Image (cartoon, rainbow, N blue to C red; front, side, top):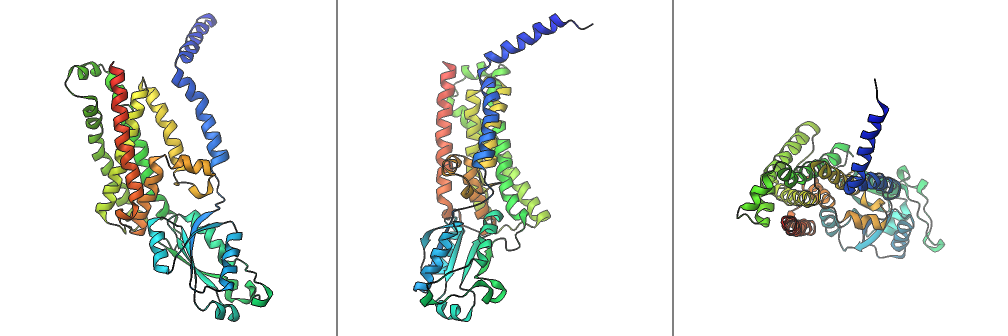
Length: 370
């Protein structure tokens, strides 16, 4: 026979316990709020204002009108101008720009003959961004009357521009997903492993033993993350190997650079987990905080949705996340064959995050001892 009064007593006890657990109570409110803001405000599948460059070899009034027509589309933002297509391609490889429009010397002749007016060189490592730029292939260009008007239907195949897609010319989704998925997997596992590291020691009663040893807080933090570094590197090997053998993902960059770049990100992710472990009081709280961090890392890092499609504020927030820098880094290394030196900005940021995070975690752990 069910006793309603006994059930009521248990329910009241659970409500009181929940109200005293401030972290869990905050997560109940913040998780749906964060998801609502991410999906309703920050996530945008219509990509605009993609950073591109122009190589104007014509330097004529017609080329200036073409550039203005491209700007008017609002699909791209021209942030650089280069003297040669080689410079533009190097900028694409380093991730500085997403595409470059090359306007050739014989632009006037092409205009008179109704041929393609120029060529887009496109970074195909992000299929959503490349698709947005490919839509400019038939962009109508209007000139002043004295320059003459050549409509799109007067050109072969109605094309205004020729399109060249680098790194993923066939637009295969797997080539974009697999390197990005590596960042997601490492974020989930590395942050989760270390977020419960200190908390588990406390719950098992081992923390008191560590306090009595001469091990300093900084030494403890470093020692906690080193074993998981090897776990992370093993995951990198598994994902890239299977991605290459099963999905045909090319590994164009140096293996050493790929592992070094991954090592920096693994260290940053482990450090983030340590910071969480100094905040949480229980393993449940640690997992809740991990979810709170991982969700924005997946949605705002460029893995699912291009950062260029997000509002400016969301783009600033995304730059704080280690996963954002690793997404850019690993795609450039694997697909573009870039050198780690070309990606020094991401490497420096991840390194600074790691060092700063370890120091803060050590200080917070010391406060806990006091």
